[in-house]
Amino acid sequence: MSITRHGSNRRTSQAVVDGNTIYLAGQIANNVKGTSIEVQTTEALANIELLLTDCGSNKSKILRITVYLADRADFDGMNAAWTEWVDGDNPPARATTQAVLLDPDWRIEMVATARL
Image 1 (cartoon, helix red, strand yellow):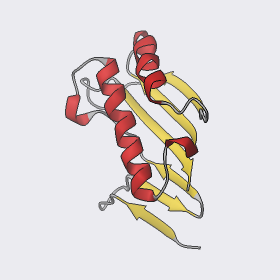
Image 2 (tube, helix red, strand yellow; image 1 turned 120 degrees about the vertical axis):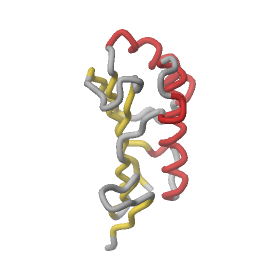
Image 3 (cartoon, helix red, strand yellow; image 1 turned 90 degrees about the horizontal axis):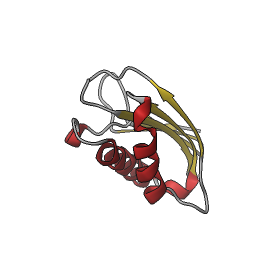
Image 4 (cartoon, one colour; image 1 turned 120 degrees about the horizontal axis):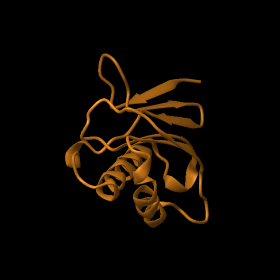
């Protein structure tokens, strides 16, 4: 069985498909960094959805998402954007933690695993 990589450069791939499992790199809100947690969450989730589509999947097949928040005070705002986006019939497992992100204008990073 082959491994397929999407959005690759010399160091990383945005998505790796191994068998029927898709592993996504951490997704951030680079186009709207410095904005509200709701706006950044919406962009990070849109990035996840685009990558899944590129791999031949969709958000209903997400198995797990890990959410990294720069400030735990953003939890409610992140959840508001999440609730608007998530497939309520197929919610994934999720873990949320506070973390120091690489750019101080980033408020969120999300890592997802899904099925084809």
